Length: 437
Image (cartoon, rainbow, N blue to C red; front, side, top):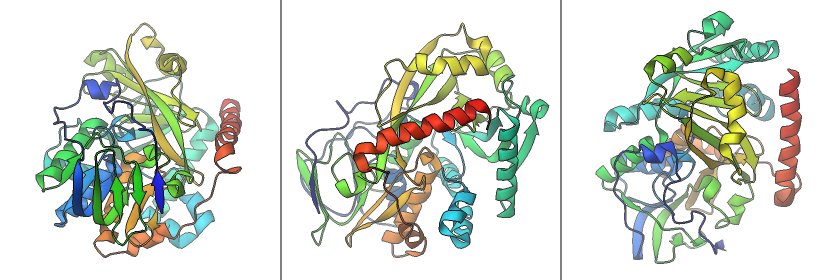
């Protein structure tokens, strides 16, 4: 397959004006790809999927290069809410109904693996990214509380017993808001500075001899050749094995992949520093929080006691005109005592949504692998998928074949109608949330 993209997706390639970019650890600027390069393995994309795959492979002794169109962690990996949330977007019950009990049992056995990999990376390579433990799912209605209890019981039936129900009063020890009826705490969840995690993983990869080329958007991919080739404006890599990890930002370079997913933007903003006393009064447990509505709020405290508050969706991946205005109303409902507090940063970023809400993994031809479509659960999912890709490339296809064998479903109406279809769907679920159904 040959594919050509005319335009760079990343503007000047520098990080967006986010709180994460403003508080990032020092990192070198890597040179762009120039000239003819040969490699055993080439990974396209220096987000979590690409970094996880490459680091696992480098640890096994493989010679790997990464080609990144912007800076390391430029996309969702450096912009997300920073929450270590276990599981896929699709529930275990949905996976069981759609793919059968064996697949559900298989997935249940690995839903906590991504968080474990993140913690192992942080410990092994001494990555400074402000890791904190636990996350809390909160419910606004009695129906939400029943849903959370069903989730706890379902996960417990698979042997996952890190979760505990919280009534309204118990929840206040973790999230001090009048908005919620209760919640579910996951003691194996957590949160961190996502861009610093990506930068730390990149440094770890390079410490093992890996090479990263930044500011090198891929404009041409040939997976038909015996050895795959990727081209940029100033160079090309010929490799024995190619791994495509562009996710929402792969664009039209590989049409067979871009038609499988839809870019969706979500927004985050950071308040001014609130001081430790106010911060602890709002989130005494210091975990991260998300509600369980279809279009949800998610939030946590940063290391310098800013409230990082996210939510909202824009199907198709466009940035809202006014991010603060889009999020402020919900923030004020959760913590009305912050109405007078300033917002210092507001930014947007895209994730790749698959129609089934299950991430996609597979192979194009004999020597090109891919992973994409984490549907908003990419922090943990990408780390797990990176390990599975590395296993497959290293000769162990047992886990890869399970995911590669799952059917993917196109958005109804194809690419032309996927955005309006999804918008209508989101209206329906938003109405259900509003009615408490």
